[in-house]
Image (cartoon, rainbow over all chains, first blue to last red; front, top):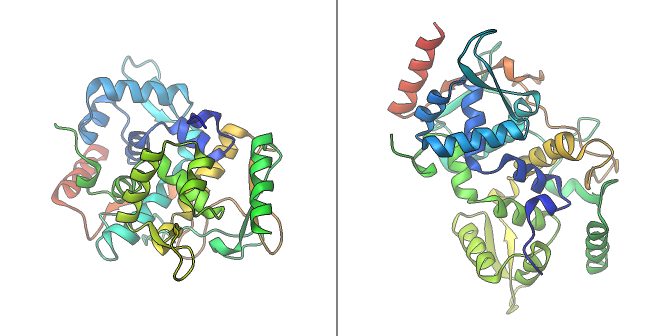
Length: 165
Length: 165
């Protein structure tokens, strides 16, 4: 079986990964959360080559994750700001930060704290919840083909069902 | 400034990305959530070359995300199972799936549904919450240096504070 491109896969995680492009994307989004907007500031903070950064930002503008806008109305200087789609990557970033803190840095050694501005205390760990709010673990989840499942996805689920039977 | 390696960055998201390795990792973890364990099954479902798959799995065993164990006690055949650290990537995967469903596939076109086994209804969207349970948006968050911040991280935050003042 030939290796598939991510954008040919019938899977939202693979499609998301295809649009995000590579790890640098998430680091650019992270810097934008910190308030970075200028090309030169992204470059300085990430230590990334000019041509690679230009390529990444162009790709992300194309995917609708960043937009290139004047710094102020009428200004000549252009800056890069997150769109609603880009801001909505927040749970992806928070999930990575919390996993890294838990399994790599370790408790009490967090490089960065994400605080709620009101209470000035760290945000809660992300939880997977049912529609009624019950916390769920992996064992509580069932993966099923959805309304957008391709014939191949349907066949895979049917095969997995047979293998379990 | 020279480009840094991810594992030299004082950032849990970058460290997490360094251990996860590349997008294929998350797709391997996803397949493991579906119940895949055998080398040949991973290969078939992802359409990935044998040598690349062997390399990825070895790397993930090294990072403590998968473990290579006998299929049953005393069996010759070895399979790959997620460790607790690997299972804990669930919020990362769910965040990617939900973002992909929302911004790429679109409502009513989800390829895969993630259901709560008890209610048989889709899980809730991930929410960023304060310690007391209040839902938070990006504007409610503050990023601050943590107990494991390096001198460079501290300097960056100080610089950002000056720039805002």
